[in-house]
Length: 197
Image (cartoon, rainbow, N blue to C red; front, side):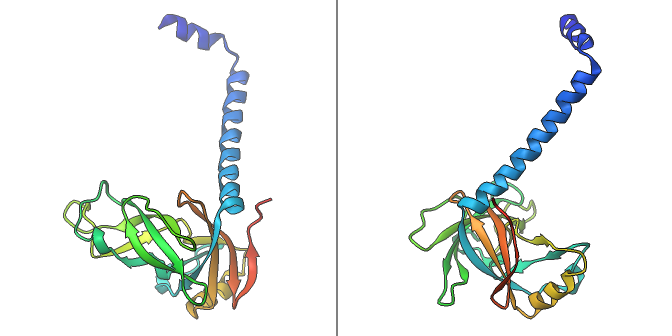
């Protein structure tokens, strides 16, 4: 124990500070690389946004988004025990006749998908039962696609379009189910697009 403490005391504080800064920079680079991988390699899906309760409208410089696939029947999971509070689930999505992706089924673990289908990973944000570890009949699911940062002052237009169901989101989804917003469509036309280099 004394040798370890003597070792740390011999290292200059500037060197320790430099190592801490480099570690933080490396962590930031990993986060950017992860998002870039999703945007570059993920399968594109288009989701319809839906109106939200006015209490959840624009906060700061981002728009809060809700989707038709955010509130789903639990299907076979209803009444089953969940492994944890706010469990991870996998939602199988398939395109409808208009090209919008709709939920097919909800699963506690990854399942096989066929051509055209996509499996997206989400987290149940509401569970019923006394301990919160039981799947309800209806699930509220968050996919990490619920907010989008926009330039200052431009959020009101997107809020109105969202509430009129004119706003759609194109998301990229990896085979693992992780997803990220790739672009926003207003009346079918791209208005914001994430660079993925």
